[in-house]
Amino acid sequence: MYDKKYFVYILTNKNNKVLYIGITSNLLGRIFQHKEQATKGFTSRYNVDKLVYYEIYEDVYEAISREKQLKSGSRQKKIDLVNNFNKQWEDLYNKL
Image (cartoon, rainbow, N blue to C red):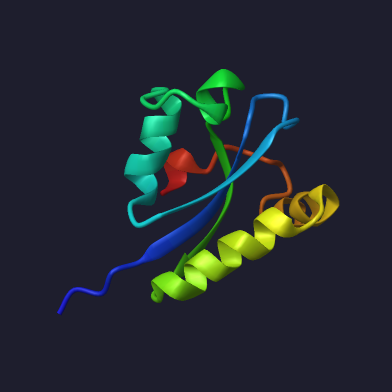
């Protein structure tokens, strides 16, 4: 049986000034869509396409809960999370 994975992720722009939190079941494909600005909205408006953080879940409800928790947290908590996971704030897309 195929085990589906869910990803909660944080994107930023090239200057690491804007933070965006999302959820997907296809991280590689979703980040590609952000990079191609396939959907008009926040991420295309602010050129937010650099993957700097992600978590993996097997339960969609846990992933949704975590996404909401991260979105409601302070900007500093999000920055600390990225710093602990990806100190250089490098784009992790090519490492997926």
